Structures are given as C-alpha cells and as structure tokens.
Image 1 (cartoon, each protein chain N blue to C red):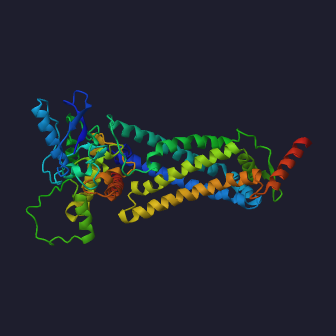
Image 2: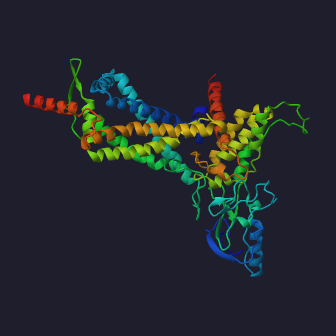
Image 3: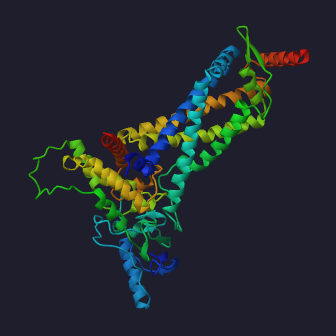
Length: 253
Length: 252
C-alpha cells in the first residue's frame, strides 16, 4: 500500500507544532498501525531525520499506552480497537491519513504524538483505590457478589485509562474515565464502604485538573476501545448526588 | 469546604442545575402547549382559562413568573459557564476532527438555546406585554364579566404570516432542544441505565415532537382559516369581537 501521512510534529511542550507530510510506498495491509509508524521511523532514521515520537507498550490492546487521533477519531476508525490493534487493511491504498496527539488542556504534548496523561493518575490517586489492605487474593466466592453486579463492575474495570474518551469528547471531559473507575469500585462490596468519599474526591480532582464537562454527546463511549457504556457516567452522577446530600446532612448535625 | 459550596462549584453540581432548571422549563412548555390547545374549543374555554390565570392572587402569579424567570436565568448562566469551561479544556483544536456518535440536536444545544432566548423575549413582548401589536381593546363577555379576548388575540397575532413562520421555525428548534435536553436530564441526574437508555431517548424525542406539533398546530390553523379558507377556527367570533371593539371605541 501507498500512504500519504500528515503527522503532528512538535519538538517539546514549549514550542508550537505543525502537521508534516510524509510518504510511505510499501506498507503491508497486514501490518498494524504502529508497525506502519515503525516503518516510517526506520525510513526517517536512514535519511538522518528525527523519528516520530509515539507512545506504545504491550501492543496487545490491554495496557492503554498507545493513543493517536487518526483521521479525527481516537484509536482510528475501527470500533472497540486500540491503535496498536488497528491494521492497515482498514485503510485504502493511496489514502491520506492525519495523525495527531490526543488533545486536552490536562494532556499537554510532551513530544510529537506523546502526551502527558498524569492528570488521570491524579484522579485515581484521589480515590480510585481501596484503603484497607486486603492481603492476597481471597478464595473464590468467599465474598458473595451478585452476578449482574459483578458483570457491571467488570465492564467498568476493563477501562485501560488510555484517554480516548477525553480526546473524543468535544468538551475534553474525563467523565467516562472517572465514571468507569467510580463504578468499578463503588459497585463491589470491597469498595462500597468508601463510595461517598471516593466519588466526591475523584470528581473534585477531575474538575481541578481542568477537564471539560459532559454534555451527553456519547462520543466517548463510541470510541472507547473497551466499549465502556455511558451508564458509568449516570452511576457517577447518581453516587455524587447521594454523597453530597449525605455530606450536607452529616455536617449540619 | 462547605459541602453545599463544593457542590455548586463542581462540574456535576452545575450539571444538576442545568437538569433541574431544564426539567421545570420543559414541564412548563408542555403545560403551556396544553393550555394553548384550548383554542380548538369554542372561544369561551381559552378565555375563561386565561382569565383564571390572570386573576390569580398577585403573590401566586408573580411567584410563578419569577420562579420561571429564575429557572431561565440559572439555565442560561450555568450553560454559559459550562461552555466557557469546555472551551478552555481544549485550547488547541484538532486539525482534523470527526464526529462518530453525537446527534445534531446535542451539538446544536448552545445555538438552539440562544435563538430560544431571543424568541422568549419576542414572545413576551408579543402576547404578554403586547407592545409589538396593540391587543388592549379586545373585550369578551364571560358570563356577564368583560374579560380580555385571548382567542381573538391569538388569531390576530398569527394572522401575520411572518409571525407564524417565525413561531413555526423556532418551535422546530425547541423540538431539537427538548429531544437532547429531556434525555440528558435523566443521564445527568443518574436516573437511567443501559436498559432504559433507548426508551428514554425515544420518549424525549416523542416529548419534543408532541410539544412541536401541539404548538405549531395553532399558527397553521390560523393561516389555513385566514388565507386558505379552511375554517379550523371561529373566524366569525374574531370579526364579531373586532366589530364590538370598534363600536366601543366610537361610543367613547
């Protein structure tokens, strides 16, 4: 395959970047999107140019390290697929592909296509955990969890924290991510004890980091490689309202 | 921090305010539409209804008006605030941006909302303050008491084709605004899950359509009666009221 690439090049966060045109002549349709970028980088290095910086790790679609806005869609056109699992056969021969970093104020560009997603770590540190030491894994079924609750919690827990939801949201809102983390822990008996404190702190940290507000577009869930449902946002909204009301009453007493 | 202040400053607190003020306004719009639909009954009904509302005790009438105004003000102020925050959250736009899922109604919310604001001002000047056309001298004899003839006022108001077209167009935008707004309300308040999502989305669209068709039926009926000779409304009553108004003016 022949490809025309328009890739965001930005040396560091201090300078402004721009789209640069590249051409690749011999790309296998069976290669992955990241392998295609590897090929480009080999070509750039052999020409003595600086290779394109991009994030990647497991290349199995489970770590959440890869990103990229491909032709305007986070993780590209294939539904429920991370960039590393996206294959070139989903593109046309001779197609022009625009590749940009995920964009949001809390996700500053470090270099080219690499962004700093530590704003997510901050939110998780604010409440995305269970305080008590639980020791090693308990025996199966020692804590009974209803099947439908376990399913919902597992669906929420499948979030890999890649940030595609923020990248796709027209408002750069992180509510699908925070909703997933809140729902995952608040649904389970191990996490339920701290559910009020958790949702209040995580939402507070999310706001402080400068993410936008959800206007129920649904773009986040549509591009999520793990297909996290919008349900988790409704759950977070519900838990936050309940926690706030409880908070107001306990402080008044 | 005071939990109440924390709520108001938080993203979700602002969204709750949008949803709750929107709930009041969406409910008002449906009630208003149902009240107006009485124009399809003999003139006595809507005139008696209007008279009853107008003669509510001042505290109640103005209480309701100010509460609605408060909801409008809160809805607009919070919307502006949220929109500013959303713009600030992505200072660098994408060179290429695609839309996968978002509906036109959801993306047009700020624009439909802004046009609706101008419409509300026009509508109040038109039929409440009555400063665009003079409807002060339209007497109606309601069981021996002379009251304002709302039936005739509405008929005269919509007999100007440009007014009717404007109202019909804006009601289309209101339908769009409600389609996204009513379904969003349930999401924001956390009152739905994946099972209910599709049903609530359809219910919200149905709500928008009911309000749209209900409101639009009135200017359409007036235009058909006045200009196409299809008598859906009582034109004779309107002419009789105008004749009565004229004779009263001459007698004075």
